[in-house]
Image (cartoon, rainbow, N blue to C red; front, top):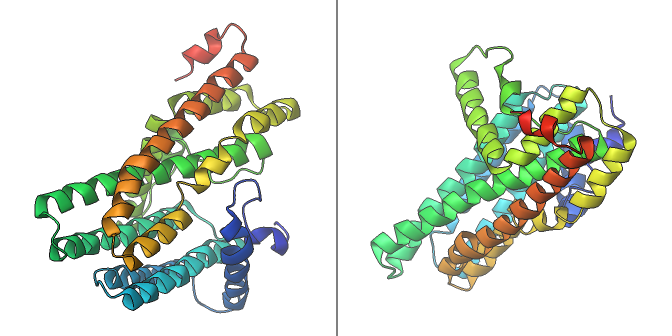
Length: 301
């Protein structure tokens, strides 16, 4: 088992400044306080969800102070979202279902927020169909951006660092069958999520499959991977959850929530394209290092 000090974050290379200095330190204190109790990590996830749903509702109102309260509640929700995984790691009970539930929590919090932003836009005089289209575009962009950030960070931990991370490929999810209806639902959501990541990063997935097929990763290759991919990691912070909370909070208090949606749908999507281009280009180059003729690399599916 990892030392408890290492459980507060996944690694400084993949964590954002706010996570390292705020969310993780508070989250690990909550997790340690809950460790001897009968409260499960999944229950903490549900606490995060309920608080996040209330926070999203408060952004439907145009009163700045109500929006500030909503922003603060989002921060509290994210603290519990950080604590649930740390509690599971402290107890050694981390599961794919828990990760799936954590992802569902994130999705529901933002879906709830987006629906309330539609209400706010329409009641603020925004053209109705335009409000639906803008929010739908922002929400779709959010889905792919979040999946990309998660993949980049976990692939870096798996290949570049070697601590495993939480990287899954589609074929990894065929092992075992969940029992309950909730577990089956969580497994289906998580499987779709992993498949979305595979579609976004086909060359990176091929590289990881090739590494698995070869049976190990050398220290020299890990160093080369880190050197090439470290340029991508800072981009993840501009597509992550923390920046979204800041943007929606500022836009709501300034009474321009549409600005947040435009940034997410357009500018953050352009940044995602840049991230994918660099990451996939690096994967192609790294695959060439493993097989100079690339014949074996091309055959990996």
